[in-house]
Length: 596
Ligand code: GCB
Image (cartoon, rainbow, N blue to C red; front, side, top):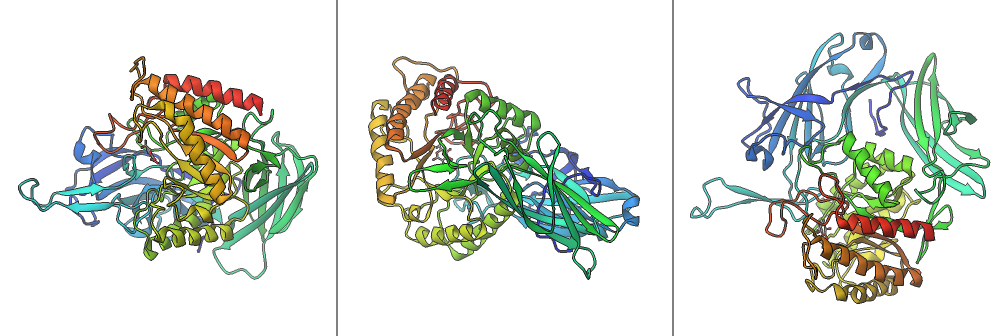
């Protein structure tokens, strides 16, 4: 069967889900081939989901660039063979290239991390018996992958042994690799719901849900299946129901989806219970839906016609030991810290985060700037553009129904001062408008106002800037002047709302000095405070739509002299304990929330 949808696997009356998370066997391929490991291969234990890099004490595994193998066995229940159905294997994400085999038969290939993919494995399984799944993973990046990277061959034998290579990338986070998110096997009935697209709108107190349901079938069918959509409120009471594969649902006196601290009932979602009937068969899938409408103009971003001010930060999927692997305790700890801070937004810097993480954002009411993995693009080629478009389509397919996603970010800090970047981003922005006209599109610039070639095609200007850190070191007294001057210029030149997506300073937790000095917690606090002064001035000018600190927590980077054990610009340590900066941010964000 051909599948276009990438709905999250869900158990229902008609669907079974089997988790393949747990311990897999792992083997690092020392050479550059993806050939099947031989029988003498020594497999070690590897948890899934997790990055493989920091699990062992072996720097060869930590720093590996190339192929790695995963395998495990599982049973497919016997009754699956007696029912006409499709069985899929679905990966939340694998870094970066993934080849998957079931019982020695190739199931699929996928290029690029951070996004889900799946394969129909119905005809490869042994039902009522044991099955083997093998996954080859390759974390090599090239100039035509998203993101970009290079492998350098070092030929100077005075310095390097023969065959010595060095992997390089321009982005500032450790290139973690492996099976990073949950792996599921799931079943669908003969005729099944393949995809759901919803667009919501509001009209006074009325909520409108436009929906469209795509179905697939194992065999050709002669008539259209019947579809019934039943809407439930948050308490599980039935609100209304409607028939048809596509339609418009009206909810009178609806509860809208609002951001955290904006309403007493943020993150409100209804549930659409979709019944797809064909003959005696039925498929049931439940989709939570937040009703909200995003609009924007040259100064303001609005949700449900109310102007929004984003209080947040950039984050990373990063923590000790598991690297970028999805970790539920960490995820909930992070959301507890986010609400403790009084934040209402963050950017998924610099790639799409796990679906489980966005699900929480929907639920709590956190506004998400949903960023693609195209971090720090340097060489703009047609081949890369094609790859970038493919990634954006996959991202929209995955996240289009999420109320938390309020903006798409095409890239972080591409070299947008280069001439070719203009046409490149013009094309991407128009693709996004075709895929989803309901959300603003942006990318995050670090170019100067006068040199940037791509911001003009965006709906919102997003800027990363580090006064008194990457320029004028030690001079926090310059921050207010520089921030006010630069952000005003961006708005005046492009006539668009401005969002500060990164600013801040590094601090080694526990290090203090008065007068303050770079890398101390004191310096980080003063840097933030000086920015707050500039933001307060700019908010009165009316075009600033939010402030985001870099970064929520300290995170791992490649080894570098400017990175003492990673990037230290976190409000929290990598262990998620507060630095001084977290307390003043909390003070500011709660004050802002109450004054809005
Ligand atoms: C940036 C990048 C971010 C880095 C940060 C830094 O501009 O967007 O990925 O981590 O600066 O700390 O240097």
